[in-house]
Amino acid sequence: ILNVEQSPQSLHVQEGDSTNFTCSFPSSNFYALHWYRWETAKSPEALFVMTLNGDEKKKGRISATLNTKEGYSYLYIKGSQPEDSATYLCAFRPYGGATNKLIFGTGTLLAVQP
Amino acid sequence: EPEVTQTPSHQVTQMGQEVILRCVPISNHLYFYWYRQILGQKVEFLVSFYNNEISEKSEIFDDQFSVERPDGSNFTLKIRSTKLEDSAMYFCANGRGPSTDTQYFGPGTRLTVL
Image 1: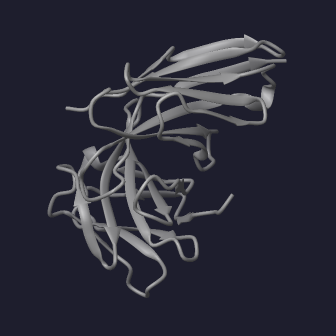
Image 2 (image 1 turned 90 degrees about the horizontal axis):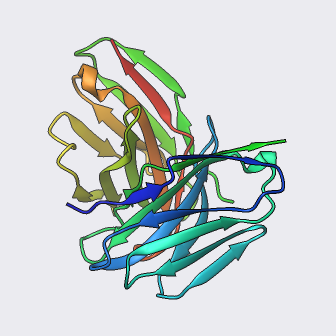
């Protein structure tokens, strides 16, 4: 069974703090790693698709790194703002199989206090 | 970002009734997926669909479930005889390609089975 874990489960930070959280996935059979940002009552928003070991991607104040050999990815938010409050989901796409089936982690719930 | 829409946003039904959940995909994005999230659990893959047929399905996707594109545009998930344990948020996702392309998610339909 392929398992994807995220930590911490939840995080409370003050506005302006920088923060990071972790996604762990099976290091064998890796194909891609997706990050999503999900606000309540909205569609999960695609942030990054990462495929290469050592990859680093950036979107505004959010960035992510990927280590496929040890099976983890970090998501960083620099200078958190209240509008960053959301659940951050990672999803692992294993190699092989007929499709792009994604296996999700439990998510990290981020709350940014003004 | 391209937008996937879903209707209804919330469906309440009695156990044993049939429900149809609808998704309006993004133009020219021909890979379709359904996922669901039972409250407090991870988002889990149900089925993927391409070229008018199922590409892959999970063990959750039993004979009670079916998918189709009845008019070549909308994508539907039908549950023939709902059970209490089918209560969940159901997400439609849509992608342009089969490989590492982004999967764009709709806002979900919350299904409550009484």
